[in-house]
Amino acid sequence: MLLQKVYWCSLQDDQNLSGRLAIANGEGKKSITIHIPCGNNLPDGSNALIRAVMDNMTWMKINSLNKINTPINQMLKNSPTKLIDDLIKRNKEFNFYLYIEQYDRLLKSKSYKEFFNKAKITFESASELFDTRFNSAIYIEQAYIHALQNEEMKDEHLFNLYNALIGLVRNERKNGNYRMYVVFLMRSFIIDKLIETDYHAVITKRNTSHDELTSWMLNHENDRIATATANHVQKTISSINKMVLQGNDNFFTDAISRVAIKLGVYAQRLKIDERIESSEYLFNWIDYCLDLAMEICKVQGNEALYGKFILIYATVSTNRDDYEKYFREARAKLEFINNEDIKSSLNLALEKISKHKTTFMERSDPDSEIDFFTSRAKQLGFKIDDPEDEMGRIIKQGLLDYNPERVIKNCEHLIMMGSRSVGIPAMMVGLYSAAMKYLVCLKKNHVMGGWRLDDIYNSKPLGGFQSEFCKDCQDCKPRSPEWKWTSAWQEEQMELHKDLTSRLERW
Image 1 (cartoon, helix red, strand yellow):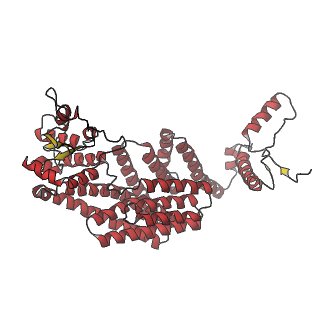
Image 2 (cartoon, rainbow, N blue to C red; image 1 turned 60 degrees about the horizontal axis):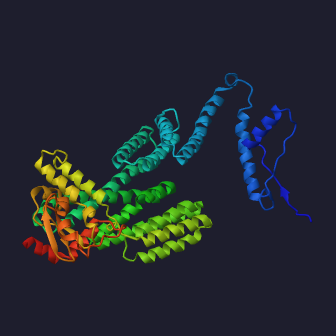
Image 3 (cartoon, rainbow, N blue to C red; image 1 turned 90 degrees about the horizontal axis):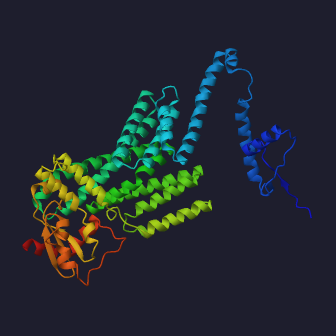
């Protein structure tokens, strides 16, 4: 029976085959046996054959350089000046693609130190093309983001990198598109921090709303943060609008991918402040930009980037009341994608986002909140690391007790409540836990107060809340291992048990 198939095998670009040939020649053999893969056949494997031919052509072009027998210096001496100038220019253009390939391989293998040493030299080299140096900086940015675990160090390195990029663009007198983009990079970095800070200011405002004096002391600082954040959001929107009007598709898609999620958080923040119209305007603007970015991806045929914007679209929608509608729309957008692997991974990612849907306010991270209060305390001059400074010790204890998870995880009936009578240090920082606090059993109405949460729970040698009320309690039930304390959870509990809070103040 005749199969009517043609089988093929690539010979030139095959290091294994080259090695076997060298061994055969060394042993004086005149031939070797080659096994042709059954999958390499026509007409079934025609696309693979075309790719193999293209790869071999590239290999032959590069390999031909190694076959030049004439010394390079002799060739150059006999060449016209214009040709030498052209060769230098072409060599630099060739370097651009060589560096991209080198960077991709180093980052893929997570060889961050080697990558940084090479990319830093290229970025700082005045002899390289501007595009090569600019591209090296963008790769360095990605290495910082993924390789540096220390957030403070990461922020410092990114800030310095963006400053250096701004300097490069100005020194090279590049066009307005590049100037707009590098300034945007710095602004997106700043706005990320500002929205976080603004969010923490909201927490402080809520936690101190019951105390008019504390609220009054914090209002000025919180208003300053809110104003700075609003100004940077407005400038960010203006920059992206200019990119759209000028048709800078690549800059625009990169820019909106950087800030869309955080701007969605800010839109939710506006809604919390009952600025409904402003919130809806910002949400609608984000939707428009993401839809436009996805249309650009369709035109470019970039399914991977298109999928990234679908996930951004879904993540932004978690901050909206009618998020189910937006999740349905996100799934409908998957129909454009032909690659089944990409489509499958996106479906799983959307399912995960939907299943674990929480707003940014609900995702509040105690560690970042403690960092915020620590920074604010230091800015106000509190010496929290000096054991001899009384005010510093009060704030340090408040920072330690801000997250009571280590204690209240031991029973689902336990809750820590802060006293409404706070001192000047707690008022200045807005840290309600830097004051008297109570450990309460909601099941049996047991209460014990003090300044240090750990002493309240397990004071030695006299004993504390645990030995007096929990040790032999039949109703003691540890919380689920998945449970985590957040300020949003605390706020919800305080609202549910506000009558108890009032009674504690009279206790």
